[in-house]
Amino acid sequence: MIQTDSITTDAAAKLIARVAVGDRNSFKDLYQLTSPRLFAMCLRLLRVRELAEEALQDAFIKIWNSAATYRSERGTALGWLSRIVRNQCLDYLRYRRVEAVYHVDSHGNGDEDMLNNLASADQKSPEQLAEAASDNEHLARCLQALKSKQQELISVAYTEGLSHSELAHRFTLPLGTVKSLVRRALLSLKVCLERGLS
Amino acid sequence: MRLSNSTLINYLAAEYALGTLRGAPRRWLEATAARNATLDTAILKWQGHLVTLDQTEATPAPEIWIAIERRLNWVPTAVAVVPSFWQRIGVWKAWSFAATVAAIALVIVILQKTPSIQPQEWHAFAVLESPQQQRIMVLASDDLMTLWFTTAQPLAIPAGKSYQLWWIAPNEAPVSVGLLPGANGGRITLQGTATEKSQYVALAISVEPAGGSPTGQPTGEVVFQGKLFNPT
Image 1 (cartoon, rainbow over the protein chains, first blue to last red):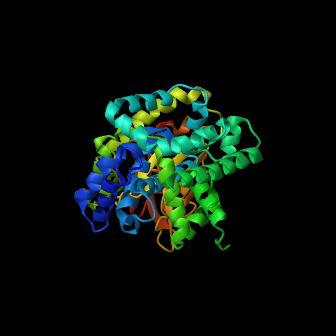
Image 2 (cartoon, chains in turn purple, orange):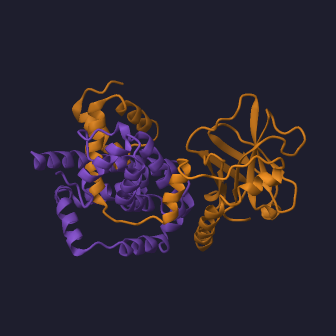
């Protein structure tokens, strides 16, 4: 069984296969299994609970409608689900629906606390944390091999959904430098990840 | 542009999965991936790797699952055809209860943050919902001189018709805001001061002849409605 992290891709992939033939109970099970991870992703990207809830709803409607297009041989179930959810959230960001909130966030307070509270409210057992850490070890090891600025750029770009120009603004770096750092980081990650898999 | 170089495919897939590929290139890559298995696989591999970066969990409120079931028409919704404009608005009140609760929370967030929001920035203003649960997100500029309407899917505006927006105030006749610029929404410049707008509590959209209502009042079906998040 391939395991990307605490959510077994086996379980999620089996549920998606049943959702593809219209099994509503499996859709509910899939939602219960994966929505805490996917909702946290939306919250981090959109920062406003109401918008994150909207995006999660939209994404799960798409998941119901497109389950038949999932091919397990192409990638993990969680990767496939995260693609749909992140695209939905990035669409919301694209329309600058939360631009004002982003602006004030740079002054601190409010939503960061909310995210921290949410994380602690859903705390895993030590066993689950150990399991998740082990599953995540591969990517973490490859990330650690990057230069610290590259690590930071990749992590912030992914978890906060920042574009190249937003990264440039956040890190006070020229746009060209950011593009080049991200590109080199991704190429290094690929080499490292492939070495680990072979 | 043909995609044959594996390094290029991998690089684009990585930027896509990371989220740094934006705009037209992102949409092009998405469309290409739908018919290019190599690219689709590369994207999914990257998504599978990157999703392990953030293992935070946050359980959504139970209402979210109920809302999803409702949008998939798995639970019955009360749809009624009634003749008057105000009665039609009334039918939607129950549906908008959850949105109202959410709106209050958002208002609190916005009010807490208002002092440092600069002019000409945008804040969430309302979500308009149709009986089919299609939604239009409405943003307002902070000076309340512009509304920005965005939709997830293009609206099915009938040929030869316009979608006209109306301000709704308690016990008052609807006041025209203007015509929705297009099927994907768009911007409308508003008239009047913020104080003049303070009486309004909701927005509604009716189907009108092209160019707008001939009477100055809604004459066609009300297709979207939603309370304002942050009453002016």
